[in-house]
Image (tube, rainbow, N blue to C red; front, side, top):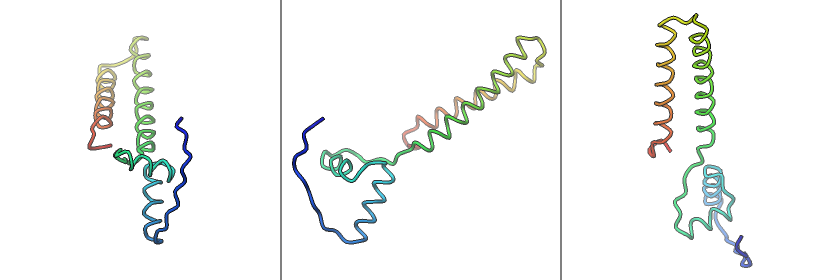
Amino acid sequence: MAQREAFLSVRMSAAERQKLDALCRASNLSVSALVRKLLNGTKIQENRAKDFKALYTEINRIGNNINQIARSVNAGIATPEDAAQALFLLKKIYTLMEKAADPAWQ
C-alpha cells in the first residue's frame, strides 16, 4: 500500500457535503478513497452489490428447482412438462446472467 503522508482539509457548503456523502454511499467508498479515485481519473460507479445479491438469490432458487426436476427425471417419475419447465428455468438463468453482464444495467 502506498505511503500516504499528506493531509487535505477542505471547506465546503452543507449542500456540497451532502452531495459528497451521497456519492460515497452510492459508490461504497470512503471520502478519501473517492477523492483519490477522482484525482486518478477513475470513473466512479454506483455499487451494485444489492442488485447482484438479488440476482444470485434468484439464480440459486431457479437452480434448486432445476435440480428437483433433474432428480425426478433420473428417478423416472418426471413428465415431459417437467422437462420443458427445466428448460424454461434454464433459459431464465441465461437471461438474468445476460442482464447482469450488460454494461447499461451496471
